[in-house]
Image (cartoon, rainbow, N blue to C red):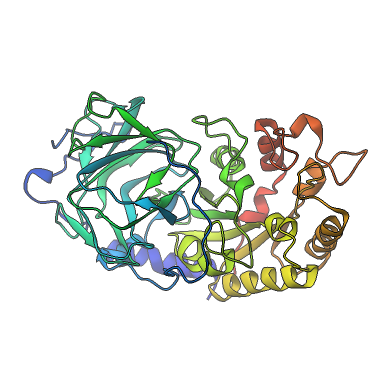
Length: 441
């Protein structure tokens, strides 16, 4: 079956599906047809990067959502995403006001909550979505309750995820969406995304319904328990690209709170382009490797959960490998190429396209050596010439100095010789052939 045929079948399913009703005081007021924003009547400490761990940690790779509506979640397109990982310990009676920046526009917003790394059920008794005004303050009238199979409270089993019911109303592209969560009894290992490059907010007690910032006095640099947001685009053929990567994709060395990661720049290009691909999810994890667990599960291990499960996925964008090379673990070019082939095989088996990027230069980083750079060059030669991918992006060519091809161009260097700065992030995003993302299998 072609990708287009599958999308037509999905559209037919949408037409046969009724929107779940919200109950009690959570009844939502639909947005008026003339509204240009996601709005309606109101219904009411910074985290460090995740520490490394062995593969003995619980795997959520095959976990299925055990709460919320999973079938209808497939009718949307991911508009924001961040890789799940293990954070610190959960805290009882804590509220999280999480700020995320969307890509694709659409209606019927849903959020996916994750307990992928929990060792016990996670209960969230209040979940709201609104639009940011400034800081922790929300635009008046935008904050609305989300439900799960019609209920205000959801319990997510250990190792599972849960999609919310659709929230009537429209969400413009490039919105600063705020999802507010509260758990009465969270404990044990928490799930989230450690290095958000975005300030979010904490409160003691349940203040999720409030649009004021008054009680949201603490900040966090992580996203807690939230790993995906989807919308239903106006055009049923709209699809998404998911970037699978490491700290460069995660945005390290870009400006915090400004959405200047390279997938953000790519999302802004896609919104202006005549392409069906509009959704972008950033599934980078700082320090991540293709082959081995450490800073997050290996890309091979988390591929299903973080990437292939995303609604509306059209294309996987693979940009990862430098951490495997620089770690001096004896990884060879053949080892890394085998990992790439496995990712491509599994994505193709799921009917998705794969675009792969070359690995960028990193001479000047403390772990650089000539042997590692030789592996990098062999891997890049394979990516450029193998013909095994549906498209190629040559980020190495964009980033490297013309005078020393093992070193990043100073103008694009974030300062540590491995992570691009804002200009470098934009340069690699601008180099992506958008047509390569808009393919069918």
